[in-house]
Length: 364
Image (cartoon, rainbow, N blue to C red; front, side):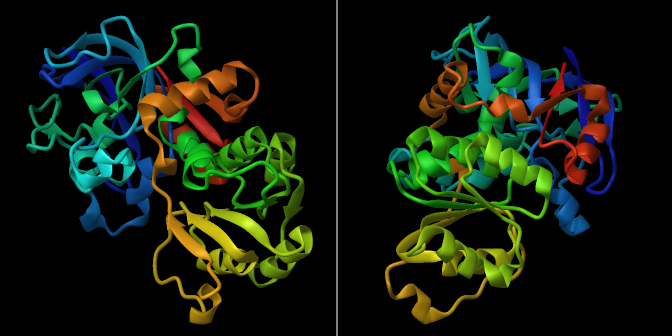
């Protein structure tokens, strides 16, 4: 069969809309017809990397949502016609997967980042008969039809609006999961969120859901800070990194219980770390490059630094939970969304990069 897909043929080239041939799904795979797919910074990560890191023509997309067309013989948790949200893939058997931390899968790269099945085969072929990368995060959802790894597929209630649920597969899940899972925040505890984009705003919404006390949002842009206040921030800061610690201490009294960085900026991370109380925790989800340094003695008190992967979520349970919170009016992540037809994917990328749009969703 054939599908329309957005193909990236070079790490610094625009997406190209092409007609691709889709391989037959295997016993442990699901054929999904996309309705909407969120665009996340991770889809564009290769733009920041040297050219040698680009793995050839590929279909990206890892926040898909749609309807099951067909299932493999070994797939029992979904059936044709089911509404599904697509998330990351994992091996299911390593020590991380076996302890309900699949986002920390020891073979995450093979199952989610390689641009192919674990055996190296690819599910897409172009008009010249050449293979095109597939199975990005197990799904490659920038295609109307995609062959998806079964572990990436999460069934959701068909009464929910499937067109808006794609961002739950990664970005929104990561922000909310950091608060609810990685931090396991309690009512009344304080939080600092650095970066009021999709991840940060999702974290702020989740902090409001759990009844956090002081919620401090940090960003350079006034419009983002206004959004942060709308979604639950009690204090907003737009100061230089070397002023962050003092501002956080002033807002919280003894320092924050938790901080969540989505910026990847080492100076911002250091300021947030210094703004924690003696037993505070900072979680890092922003993609940064280079070294992160801090004073050795600053950690002796009991502070903790956590690397955040997908908010320590188990997608099959956490995604339906967030979708229900949204349906109940308690977690309005859909207010961050602006839709673009798949043919306008380059416009969606530009709008996201400029900050004009917080969460683009591509529609099919």
